[in-house]
Amino acid sequence: MALVKPIIYQVVGYQNSGKTTFILKLIEVLKSEGIKSVTIKHHGHGGRPDVVPQKDSTKHLKAGALAALVEGDGRLVLQADESFLTLDEQIRFMDFFKPDIILIEGHKKQTYPKLLILRNENDLSLISNVTNIKAVLVWTHALINVVREQLEVPVFHIFEENAMTEISKELIKLAHVIGEIGN
Image 1 (cartoon, rainbow, N blue to C red):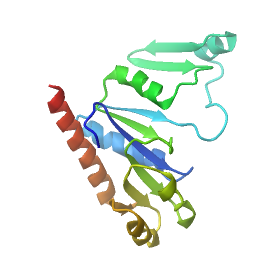
Image 2: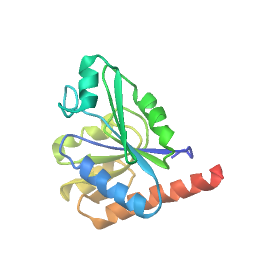
Image 3: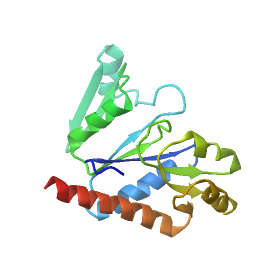
Image 4: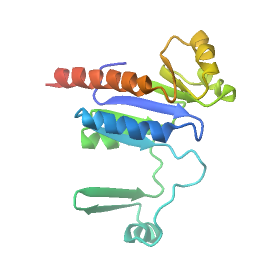
């Protein structure tokens, strides 16, 4: 991975492969090590993401506001309509928060370093359709050797505790190196 701050790391796979669950655990590990992270999630289910209908910010959007920002007790919530930001623009936006790592869930076609999650044999096509794969998680033990024949990256079973350890260790190491370069 290039030594650029913040580190950008994607977690990709098909729907219900475990991307969100893995990212949640990764955020906890990173936080416990003093690493600041932000996330960007691609809503790949079609249509717009849900918003809470009766909140003032949603009412502002329905009235025609392009964006509505709500702040309270240190929490900031932003909703925006008709805002078709590219992933790079979203990354620049999140950089405002000065994270050490930006975790991106989805956006398979982007070229950032990524963890690929494969549920079964039907997902193997992702190996040739996704670039810059740094590690792979699989749901079936039978896929481990199949993936290792095609890629020279670490391959773990989804429930292998070592998977989180190894992936987070690499990200933490990079965050510390970049932090030292920036100082």
